[in-house]
Image 1: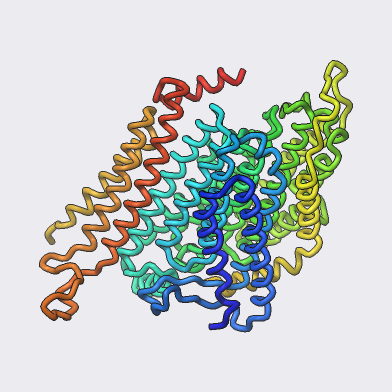
Image 2: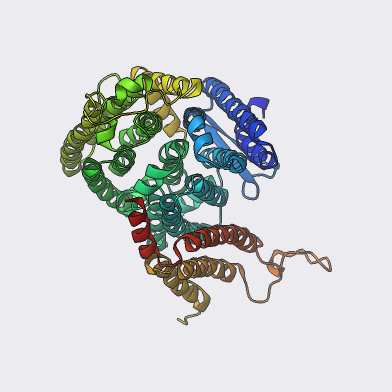
Length: 500
Length: 121
């Protein structure tokens, strides 16, 4: 065991410990400490990706507390985990940076340190979700993530956010209840909580043909539970209010990280806990596939009908989550790779869109309605450019992340059966078309001449260095994701090979 | 074949009741009650699975080290962890409910939603 292999553990422990410490800090100290911790975790993740790419074995397990396999708790890390952790951390840091000024405007002064506490807890929970090899640990951090996310929504106290948070909690509790039941049944069936051990036992069950029915039930309720939590189409009712009215950092973090954390866990369950062939034989993938296809279309249609830019982006998230589940529902290697790539592409893009939309609204007298947003691209140039880049990426403009993931989805569909291929290609075309309608409409709106009767406060104070910096960095990451997609996809598919 | 999985069956029925209550009830307090029932049902299931007639908790007394004398302690540990999690979530839900009630003077989630919409306009 070498020292660098402790990095995943440090990435979990540092934010977790800091969250506790931050709760007693003064406001400014809490802010600087949070930035310090996030920078540290991001740096560690970069180092970890570099070292991992040179690590011959591909993945390793790390014993917590030096108890061997069936008894102790474990962390397991490979290329996929390393890359995912890096992306999550970068997005977390940039989102906080971009929304910092808004956050200090929206939150009561004495409540601000608590916001940082929740953000750090969320980081710790995400990292634990990415790295853990123990199903029950995953459940505990899942709940921590839910609680932290709920607090992020309510941080800006308004009627809308309170109701949104309540609805969010209700849906999430249903999801985690199902997930917990799934773990319990699985523990009952296999006698293990460590993911690798469960997989051995499940393979044994599949070979002997015993307990097929309970196993199917377990897979179904776990998938649906995590589907509910990550706002898969019919369970998305809380999305627009939660993403649309909270402070921009919260919206960015929730849409791009929290839901992705749950999806990553589901991926882990598919690969490492149950095994992809057993999953495919239960037929649950088909159900997720159908939900995803419907979501891709319905999410976009709802987005078109919105007159509020933040709500529109929120509904677009529903459609994009549909894309990810569609890739997983294809059930082949390329589909999974495309889904993971889209997790990154969507996360980077959506966080930027939410922040940019906040900037545009700020330049339009704090209104998020499209009629007031006309010309805001000129009033807040950096936000306008960032929004345009994000919109083009979501639509699937070449050289941006969204294009690569759409192409990969199409290629993955080619490799699957006839009916699925047709369905995916048709829905992909329809959804892209709908995406284009609402995103390009918005881009055109923000660069049109304002209505003659409209008047805006001439200079509402500059958004500040942090905001601009964060949007520029986000744009760079977006472009980089498109330009270097080949390398990232290779890393993902290598990682997926060592994931199970 | 005799049927003896009464606890498990009770747990599943309770889980169903709790789940539907949480999903369908309009009253927030009843929703929270449903949530508690749902989680408690899972703990009942775990506890039932972790118990074997005639065996004791694995604390070695009188030098008995035979495996047959003791039960697996992990299900009990899971129940305890789960209770901690669900207590904190319940507290959070109750806090949200209190804030909503102070603001809108009702516990009906649909009415609250309607009031919020009116407030915006």
